[in-house]
Amino acid sequence: MQTIIYVMRHIDIGGNIEIPYKKVGITGAGNATLSSRLQQISNTKSPIKAQCIAAWEHEDARAVENALHMLMEDSRIEGEWFLDKEGTLVERMQPIMELIGAKEVAIEQSNDAYTQSIIKKEVEAKQQSDHILVGEISDLLDKPLRSSSRLAGPTFFSDEKQLTYYVNARKSGRHHLSIGRSRNVYEDIKEFLESHGFDVEQGKKGGAKVIAISTETVANLINLIEREFDPK
Image (cartoon, rainbow, N blue to C red):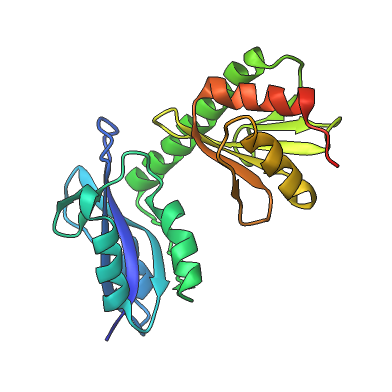
């Protein structure tokens, strides 16, 4: 019985190209080789390797797969392969899988030296990109804020407002800004930002969130809060 929904990608072990496609498929469960089979399905000697990056268990995996495929139809390339330009497919699938009660399956780390090297390079590139983005936003702020890019990506700390600004960076330059420590003032900050033309969502932890905004808008929004927001 097929009870596992998985997301797979292709990686170029030579590091020459970035492949923006993800496969959403299903497979069986209940044996010791599951995690290793999911981790790397393609074992042929090729510069393009297949790597599983996420998996969940659900009793009706086929129905879940069909629903996900329909939801992503506009980005389908061929068969079970979909375009994921931002590299955020797994992140976007997480709340859906939690909502339907799917259980996350641990993915065994690859022992392949080439795969490990590519993953290491990807992490380092992301850290460098986040560090650059912190600098770009800092240059646009009206007043300096403590900042970091090590743990949660570009992050700014406001001691005056007792808020934390988390920037979820996107390749397209349309970033997401989550406002940490704002759960207790969510309604106030939502009303304040909406009065200035921003669409506000409530994040998973209860704080305010503004999505798909440019680097300049991220800085402008932070400046606006720091300058004018006064919780009731």
